[in-house]
Length: 247
Image (cartoon, rainbow, N blue to C red; front, side, top):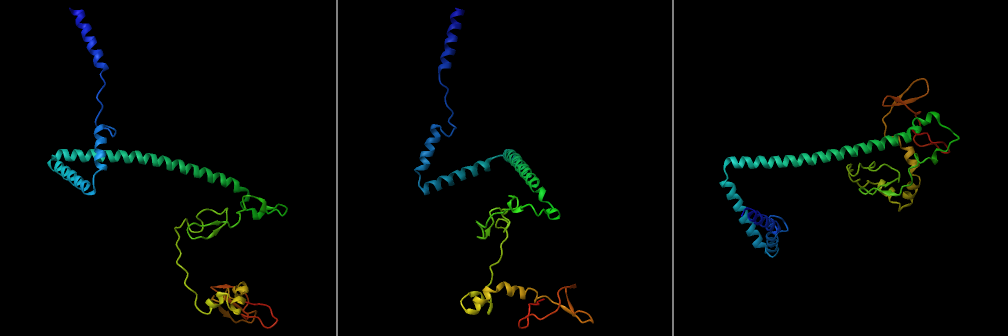
């Protein structure tokens, strides 16, 4: 009868719902995928190389038998996937870069406000104020070592200022020639005297390499260096019991 037919159909549908669906055999955790991984793990290098070569030949044969329209469609699909992936990555990178730039700009503005009271401070210097106590002018002691060239830096010094984070590469200094090499060694008495008085020697010879043009007039003698008038002309070394009168 008709009611018994409908009851039978309903029972069949309920039975079908209770049957578990067959799992896909395409995932990484499927039985087939696990079996393939076990086989690959126990393969030798020769077997693995042979399997890769067979796979390459099969793929080459499939592509050779592929029609021109299918080849063009496959390449276009691949280009679209790559373009979409790059677009998504570029959008994320651009967003991250904008956020990074925004934070940097906010930090610089905050630092600029902190240093604003010190702008042109020399024109309104206050003798009664101890500026050395301000944290904005104290750069600490030389306790930081550059990781690139091992140069000592102040703890408050800007990072990368000495060598631009390794981008600036200076050539190695050549060994000094004689007699400067002996003077810098520190072994002989003359070398020790030179090193003890090196600042005075630097002051004596600081302008001796400059070219000068002596102007002889009826007034006080003077000389020119690159078109500018500097100190009076005098002896490089002072006379006995005299003062230094270097260029």
